[in-house]
Image (cartoon, rainbow, N blue to C red; front, side):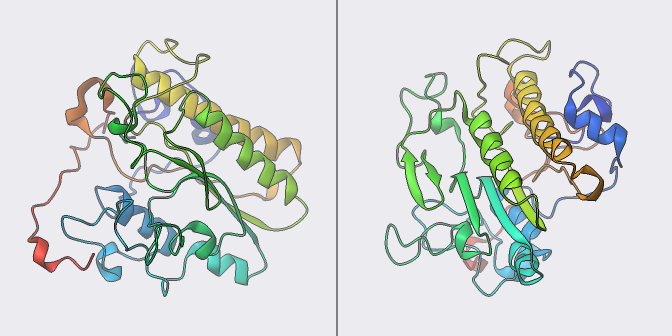
Length: 279
């Protein structure tokens, strides 16, 4: 998702949605920069507050793959660990992409429950990619080695069925909020939209004048709205801090499946000597 993808950030055809309501009711950030142009290192920065280069996540292979025995270093202190020590209940739902296993195919050494999260709902331990397209637009069939869904540390789908994925993430997030509404809580809610491959439910497909990408933004915004409604219904809105951000900018070269970076250019890959990578 890019800086210019929302109506509240100036997109001329994207429909207004609940994310835009957040911008209208709260603060709109106009000078916030990502720590990296790709998923794993930037997500690590979001969760640790440290630059990726300081925790060994640089070079060509800085994104974690399902088969690589690496992940977010255990010695790094995540937001979840810090807040749990301060008495917060901690939850995570959605995309992870910070490592899975180390010594065996199922040891889960780098999964969210190892990084300070008490509750881990439905999650993408790896990512959502073109190779996961079950609609046969980009591939003949999904790659089961890349495309699977977890609940906590257990595989529940392989490959991923995308039809109601956003709804499932949203319901898990609302469940965590309801279960912990009487106490302090921290929820890391990480939607996989609008990452390619683009997907959507029947309720949103074909509803945006912007096409499939706009549909994806609309469904993402709906999910945010559902979570905000849950917070308000529970009477928590006056004492809950909600931050919405993308993990990195839009991939403009994807044309109709890419987003809009507004006044910024595309975040590009830097050609780095792979011999210096610690991954």
